[in-house]
Image (tube, rainbow, N blue to C red; front, side, top):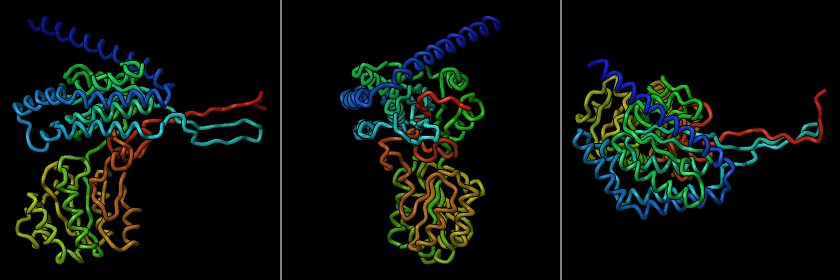
Length: 431
């Protein structure tokens, strides 16, 4: 019996590998077509995709209801469930995001540099698509629309592997994107969703170096670590968002109250949500109680060091793990630090190099913070929740890259291109 079961398992694995290989081959062919597609053709495809999402809103809501019901039965709740839910407002936001991507300048074919050598050779550095991009993400259905539209805009084919919880929603959204491709005469294989929930498909994707040029993971630490450990393909990583707000001694109280509350509580489940509040010791007793009262009234649980707890009895003791935890929930860690130097030291030690903000009216202190904090996005006097490609004018994003190679910060259409050199001569030979 064990031999029979093993044979069935092996056959299923071979079938899945063959299916993934076919997806990769089709994506490579589609990428070749997209790489030379005109800006107008891509614009028509994106316009049609946005229209299809709006027209298919009832079907998208029905598909999402199936996903939400299944997730609820499996014990998903709170912020994780909220990330999965679609409603009319969120569907319109997806379509509007595609509209904004459509309106962006075409990132392909830009002349990045142009010079002529003494021997007469003219050399140009020109932007080109990356090729085939594999995007592996968790339960947010809107990532399907964002990733598909950004890849199309930048002339890349996309292989999407969404979270199993959002399978029906992502399938319905992908069909809308493919309707856009058909309307513009582009190959439907330019945007493909892996048609299975099997986790083995992720492992196969990570080995498809002949068919996929870049892997972009978007999700929690376990997903990112798996991709980085197993991938044979270059990875553009979106690590967790352990984001900080530092309140300096020269902070304006009214601004600070509004920003801290927004950074933590506007949407607790996004990667740009603040997870740690740092406060200058020189002003902690004066400002912190008011700030904490705002958070408590909004339903935020607080964990802090001994100095923070001495200022507010409602603050629970923080453990060492709290400084490195992405809560994605209404929980905030609070620590008193010794000025901007203490804040920078804490952030660079405990942070994830994602997004960090300083509240201060002292320009010199702000500039020091902006220069010394080693994160992809560093902000002065504004909420960390602006860590979003749409808010940066990119229309949408695949994620916030926290590494240092190729792209850093919001990854939009422009960041999904590389470049090549075009050299034009008149018969030159090298001596």
